[in-house]
Length: 195
Picture 1 (cartoon, rainbow, N blue to C red):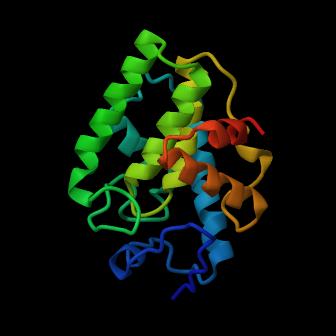
Picture 2: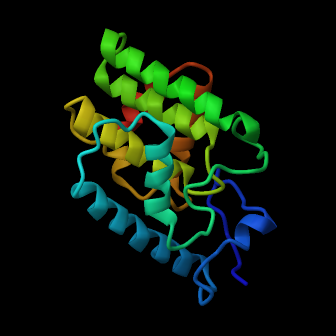
């Protein structure tokens, strides 16, 4: 059994979610992190070979998560089935995601805010909805980058130029920027994503 040591602000998995671990040889958090990163790298290669015409829909969002984590977790690409201390109630995930996708389409079509702010707000709301049992931050960052590069013609965010998977000052700044965005203040997040 793996001894999970969660970084600050990470959502702990429940027993049913932990039981969804596919590789049985993993015994440390470092091994899990490496296995997940290898799977994410395969998802990035998959993305490079495709040009999706629309990413603002539930099937694509689930497919990307499955591509990112499907070799590690049985539940990859499936919305969580339990409530957490963050995120909407699990049964509201689909409707909240549809509202978010509709909002992003509106923001883009009407140029209500700058492209960076559209992507930052998209990222924040994905994290706030908390679609999946695990990997929400990494998934939301990649979704925002896809939106930026392929649909808003902007360079990728730098996300603080550090690993956000581990506890540290960069992760603390990232979480603080998300908490400020929860209050409707996007300034910290907009500064962080380009730092």
